[in-house]
Length: 314
Image (cartoon, rainbow, N blue to C red):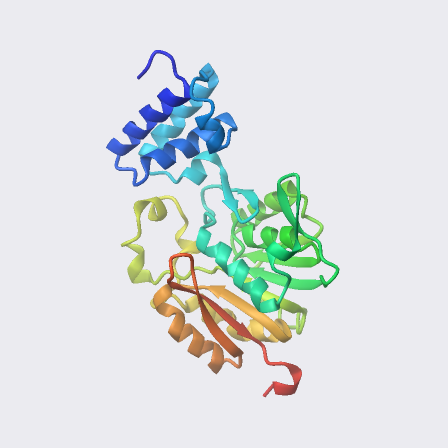
């Protein structure tokens, strides 16, 4: 270890240490941790190579690199995860937001024919907010909200949205409330602890323009083959989707159809090998205009369907 810990020296040391610990991307991990520890962007790291770290910063890096070397996810170490145009807090016991889920939000916006981000965004304090004279109010239900990343992203990007976010986990609900408050969205993101849509059909019949969900969807037999970074640090409750990964979807398909407005949109992230069956299930449960969208890696990932319009309801 060098006598003087400059930005470059610690980057090089961290990369070597994490490589020896079999980190799949040691340079990226070192950059992430140092960026968070110093409050610098990755670009700023490379323009600050000669900057020495303070004693406190060195201590933080020692602890964080040790934890990363033990396989802990970067997001849990820093306590933060980027998601679309926001950053949310994360904690152990709640699913970490992933890039695939960003596509889920994009597909929902696309299906609702909301203005595209590129057409409706103004830059303000480095955030992106929709401003459009064509915007209209929408009501959204986010099932299995976890950290609240989906609910908060929708409310952030579309200020006309009112979002109800639910989760069975009290830990997740507390975190989702925290994130909505930290982002100044608490007036438009309401968080409730609930077991899927239990007791919601009478109160919320024909209410929602969009029901969106990233439910537990990993087939039970696949869980053991997942990377230890997932299985050792993320809750099984947020992962296990039963034998075929569709247990949770089956539980809420009918209730979601009741609570959607006519022509309302259902958008659900699912296991890639389950999408064909999921699409068939949606059709059997009375949805139409069913389609499957791919994630950033080209894998089938998103189920999108609509409740029939009033003239087409069976």
